[in-house]
Amino acid sequence: MITFLDLKIINQQYRQQLIDACTRVIDSGWYIGGTELDRFEQNFAKYCGTRYAIGVANGLDALILTLRAWKELGKLQEGDEVIVPSNTYIASILAISANQLIPVLVEPDPNTFNLDPSKIEAVITNKTKAILPVHLYGQLASMPEIMAIAEKYRLLVLEDSAQSHGAAILGKKAGNWGDASAFSFYPGKNLGALGDAGAITTNDSELANMLKALRNYGSHEKYKNLVQGVNSRLDEIQAAMLDIKLSYLGQEILHRREIAQVYLQGINNPLIELPKIEGSAVEDQQHVWHLFVIRTLHRDALQQYLAENGIQTLIHYPIPPHKQQAYREWNDFSFPISEKIHSTVLSLPMSPVLDIQDAQHVVEVCNKFSL
Ligand SMILES: *Cc1c(COP(=O)(O)O)cnc(C)c1O
Image 1 (cartoon, protein in one colour):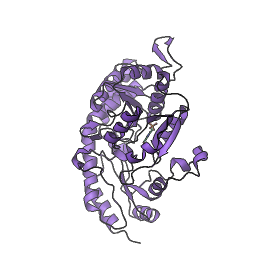
Image 2: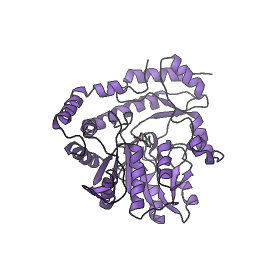
Image 3: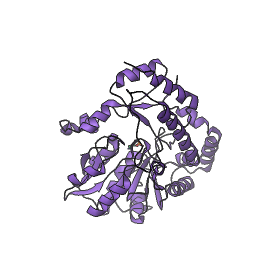
Image 4: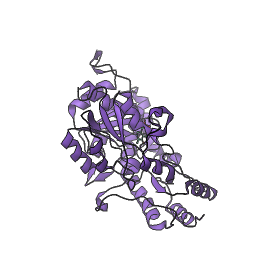
């Protein structure tokens, strides 16, 4: 059986170091808001190339709290519109709704699955205050174009980088393009904790300070509350383990790229459409292959055929946000590109511990698929 993503094997690689880190935290007697979090925040900010990283409880909170911080700082207010791709994971949209802001869905470029910059200007109104591009599947959205639009209309930009730690365009990484960026360290992400965790990166000191207060009851100084905050902290024990895993992220990304090359060069079947890497300067676009997503008009048949051949696949994602019950008021909206993407995508096995031979086997099996 070729599993989609084996978290046990991924973490076993670093087992002793992880145990040592946990032991250090256990023996320190200090479990929240200490040196482990400080160290990880500094190292993660350095990795992304930003001045600040602020650890929070999960990726959804990273998104919610950034928008909330902008409200507290007077940069956003209830009813403002936020542009977001229509084919994203629902968390990006929940963060907007949770702040009483209005999500404005825009279709992606079907080739990259990312927000299509040429469709942004048409939906900008005098209520539009922010763009929330999502770097889906490990590839940055077209950030140079998106930032140019944001500058022209004076919009805030919050990147959803939950799937793209380390991805870059022109050497500039996810997390360092927008005014702020939200990361998830959910165990299955490219940088995964052994539980829930998230962070925000930014170069804005005012925003960083507000986020540090918001995650801790709105308190910037002990027993003094600046705003009505929440409890969304990143535990010392998770920070300690994340710091170890961060040091291996670079090599894990290289392995993902190797697997992607095996698939890209080997899969040759008219029934299967391979993912495309954006831009003429392909070497500049540093895809980190969180997921390797193919498209096929015969998804159910292909998924079943691969399963019969011992290959586990998943669908990211089967239902677009506007067709979810949670957003029933949008159920009649039409986003044909998103709908087509959601009905044709299939994610092949991809992980930092997937064997190259196993990837080659996936290629052979895919190439023999017929109707
Ligand atoms: C995983 C994910 C999130 C949410 O992260 P959690 O840590 O699970 O809350 C947000 N956006 C995208 C695109 C994601 O993939």
